[in-house]
Image (cartoon, rainbow, N blue to C red; front, side, top):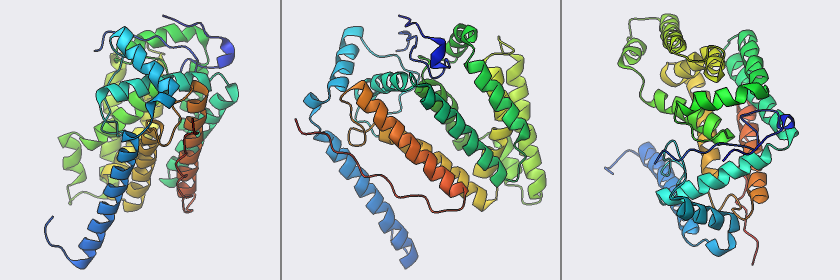
Length: 332
């Protein structure tokens, strides 16, 4: 079912409509090592405690989540591109999919407000510019590509073609989660976890200079993007704009995650960690209220602002602010 959207909602990526498709179905160590191990165990214990807290959540008070469960039962499932239950600490596929349905609704509700759309657009631009500047890269060409993407997303006439284009990539709904978080960011992180052997061979070659390695890596990324462009059905569609941005960001992230620059590696890893922790937050009963669409959208926006602030502070050379305390659900 297609829900009609208005131009005021600014962009297909952030609008309040989406078209769902239903076709998817330890050994002894030194003192230093022991200290690190103890830290890991504390982190594991914290995750276990949070998991245990979710086990005792009173679902009867979570009206939005209950509605998603009914949706799952009545429709025989909820469309999804990939199951990420382990990543976001869900106990089962069904829990992940029901929460996914709620998160989609929350993002749709959130982007009814044009100021929210503008905040996300401005914040994304600034974080990526800061990353490029941190890596001593000129952001001018990136800015042109980024603004072209924003203009494209606000063109109502491009929305239908964009849906068709992304459906070929198995994207199930035109929401911020499905397009930006899942299709773009998480796929990019997955690729960085398993780079091509030709790339790792160059990076690990101790006889090559770092400048040569970075240049070779950049060339390899550009070659892949050029090849992908040749197979695009829409030469000026969403993926064409996405590849234009990727030409500047993908080499930076690849060099940061795979190269020898430890400072850049830490920044890129921190950025990745903040994105993943944001996903964990918004799929958590303890961090978000799955009571109403409005409550959940408010909590998701709050977490987004905190994660953006964390990354901005880190890039500015400051210590990131402490994590927000987990919210308590209201008493019945």
